[in-house]
Length: 228
Image (cartoon, rainbow, N blue to C red; front, top):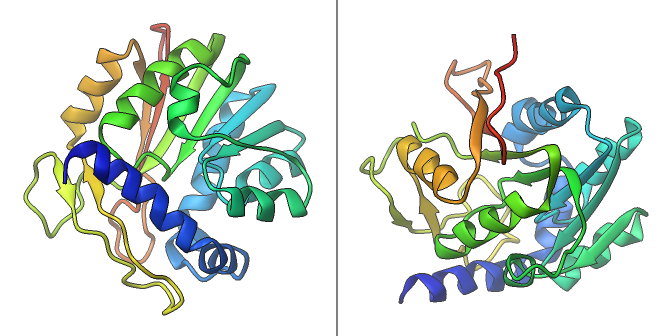
């Protein structure tokens, strides 16, 4: 199976797990999200004070709703019709659009912030999406990416596809998809290759283990001075 096939399998898996994922999010079944990563991504967005946010790979829409509750104008897109239907049912602005369609420029609207919250799981398609994000941002805009920390243990520290798993999730989940692991240097090289510059890197900590629960990259299409 080549890279493109794996990228497609990821989307197919989400088609199969719409109900399980929606229930897991809305019932607060994923402990790391409840205790660390959900608040981390919301706080990272709020810190940038954007006027318009695009949640890329929005799933069932929790982040768009959370930002809207804080007075931030947010919209979401996702490739999976079932997830868009679940998101729209609770109100808000959501559009079905695949990553390839986004990469081809079909979004066609400038935003102050693009958020990718654990939604960049593939390989080749991720580079294409990041390139399109650089063209989607306003002059002072940024992209905020939260993903698995590269310090993730249990596998060799090198780029490559990893076998999927629903360990820690309910038995309602099925057919885990492969996902593409990147080292820290690989992420930074990828940003540079598509014209994005790292502005800030955050490492939200798990208060129980003292280890990073994730990594958050704040990148922009223009090199800016770092925050004081």
